Length: 417
Image (cartoon, rainbow, N blue to C red; front, side, top):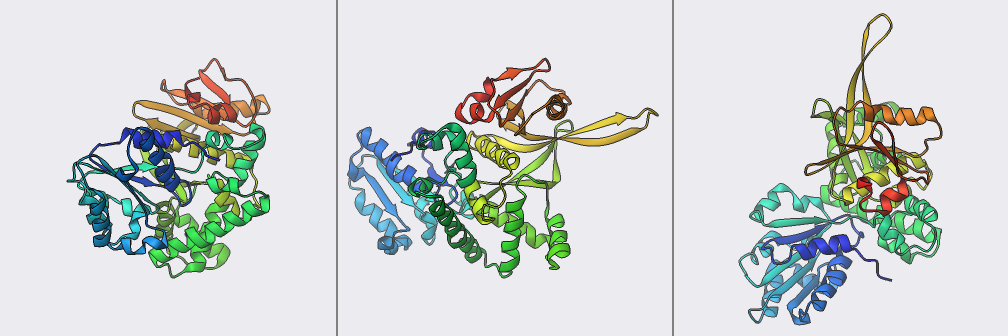
């Protein structure tokens, strides 16, 4: 079974021969290797590239351990380049190579070498490393399967599919697991033995128990506003453990660097400025999040919000939490200041959308509650409410669009409806 990843394949195709090092990043097991070694290499063959001009090295493979030595890898690739025609160099998990930046930079001056690499650690794509690429590092972020991609392989209705997707996530290997027990075991093992182990080793974490407890807290409160200071107080009051907010800040950055979670900042819509704290954290894959808390919390409201956030990221939007300051007066004329929240403020170039996630809008009161923050935004950008219920797309007199989660997830142009 082949799941097409046309969005990411196109990104690689569009970057061919651009004189830059194409770096495919993403959480482990999201399909980076498959994209490069199967989908992209097959595309090259179909366009007439001979196998001898596609140099592929999986650096995670024990059989290639010697090629983790930078000089031996250089020598190996050089021996494969035997004429002036274009060669495509595909390296998987390149961060396993010592001094890999020097290796990659060595091919920037080779006119018939087009380089593509994968890496699972955002640290290796820090600004410092990009600088070492001399401004010629081109990052392509890949995410777990979107719901639309998931449904191309799922045998069942879209309603059943969304329940499955919000429970076990979109890591491609989920389709190789035949039972819920197998899926659960796969995700739990992957989280503990791959992601967490990798982070602990990379950052030399000493307070392992506190670090793991922080993961549990973040997993249990997706989409909730928090910050290091607040989390430090939680540790002290609930766990009777003192952890410095700066340590918690570092731990959260490690989780983001590993692509496990993504931080969303708050944005003052009227003041047009960012608010330093608090933030929201969303999981890149809900299956991993659910496995971490033993599938105990099944709150569709928060799960749907996380799914929408991830989909917006896949579509290339910068996503913030919207804050709308409002001033009201009581009967005596006394002013009261408050803040309304818009779930997502999405920007992409000159485009902007304001989006509310509402799993259920069962009555007029709930509809008004979701619409109030959007009505307080005094600009002409599109305002959308996404519901978990099946419904037709409709627009009200205030210009607010309401659509179902299925229309949003399955139609790449849904925001234009």
